[in-house]
Image 1 (cartoon, protein in one colour):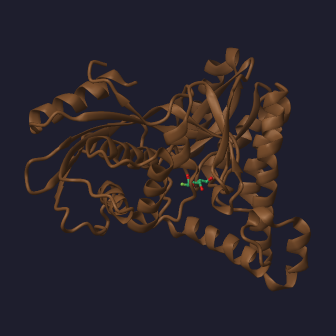
Image 2: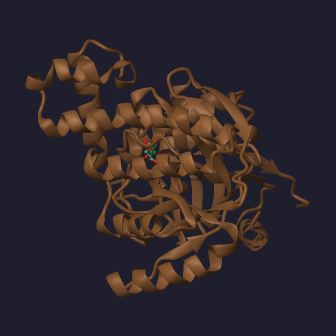
Image 3: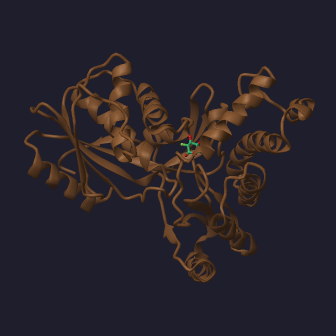
Length: 385
Ligand code: GAF
């Protein structure tokens, strides 16, 4: 819990609005492995982290709703009579989208006031957007007694992103943010949303996130294009999703799809298999195998799925060369954001020094480092906290 952020949000809310708010903490996520497998109804291995969004939400007596983004020092007033996407609306569309999708479920929130802020830089690939969506739907559910289950809430968050932001995301981010558990990772089957939370112990190694500080832009059509390719190939094969497709199936339609699309689908099939192998490796405390799977995942995203960038490839290459890093890969949607690295605990500081110097030399800009702890999902904070 970021106590200074919490204090600032509470103070601003109190100074601006008269109602007593509910305060919601909603975490971002990491993903150990399983990238772009979620919308193919496959497996993912994410965890919620101790960084995310804090939102104060209260009922409003006035005729409108007001939302304030404390970090950006921006505020937005809107009427529940007109909830439509705003062109280039940024964070506003997450807020509007959640309201619209709650209504699509037949529930009616009243006018509200919202102040929110976070400690994950947007564009770092740690799912600040899912954290924001979840905090709002969770808060409105509390405030207006809407009777939504956690599962209904994550589907609302996901649809808000589809319809108001324009990203056809899978369910991993919203799920991890909502259902995270302290010190545990979640093996999620994205087909039926069944999951298993299990304790993570990397022994002598620790997770280090390195932000390339290249802002990833999910609404970049590249994400939606990848999804469309996967769905098209599954449809050609008469399968529900790529989850059901094998390498042999792909070879059978080799002359009907481009080489590039065949490679993309191969990546998804392989990545799905890697998730299950990674779970096995974690259960056996086999960090070496887990690390190799992370490197292989990055290799697939770089050469087959083609969603990395120069900076991410550089960071993973450096990790590969270093004997104290068991594995590394880019994380999230791609084209920027963070790499996840498994680094020997007693070499962390020297590794960070080495990377920050070489990254600066190569790209004339800084990378940033984050240490994260696995934490609980979206929850209400007692106001005495
Ligand atoms: C983004 C999406 F929001 C997720 O649903 C997932 O597809 C991820 O990219 C890639 O694994 O974070």
